Length: 346
Image (cartoon, rainbow, N blue to C red; front, side):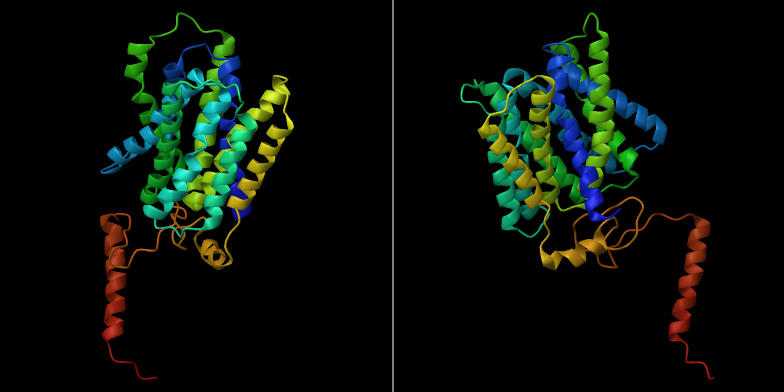
């Protein structure tokens, strides 16, 4: 897949997340933040896990748990708390700090080159979100504000750690692990704080199905693929599309009017996304070598981690069975003998 198609496919994820606000207000039961988070993640994750039949091994038990909590569990819960306690505009603006946090962490943790374009795009996008969805009479709740900021920070750390650790298995299994962990950690708090609803309407079921299948499985498969293949700062600016889609759906489906200020904010978001996807000339060759592969080498499970290639002594390879080891050992031994032998006479 070329770079343009990869960016377009990754952009589908925040576009699907932008439907969360409409689905939450129109289809889900009120005051059920944790229930919505669990049903969005856990059922879909279990179905994927049953399909792939791949469990974590070794350090990936705790790594997948950390990623599941940051990318899904804590993020979902905090997002719904913020959405329920704040007007949608305030919640969306607070969540839009995500690209700024990612831009800083990408430099500090991943040692990506600090580019002014990335920070400018993040700042313009944040200002655009504020213009688009933040109204002057919006009320502010301290718990909601803290939850919104924490949600943006949680997914920002999740993006950076996902790039730093990569993935050891296929994309569906990698996504399934995180969905299961993210939903499982919220089951006990949900039962204690909210309990189970007495009944669900068909509209509720449809809303949860939409969030679980499209907003969960489809969106996160596309998102994780983009996170692993694109620079962290670049992919993070695509998150601005979520509030843009949310505002557009409010205008189309709910008849909410858009002022000139809001239209200016929408234009700023589009400009920030386009600016964030531009590449510096000196990085184009390197990205062509690494895009869709691991450090320029074809690998079925690892795509463009944005890290320098490991030295030959530290490069890891999959474990081989006895037969494979024997074949490779004899082949390598033959090469060593040939290298040390005198040249054959012609």
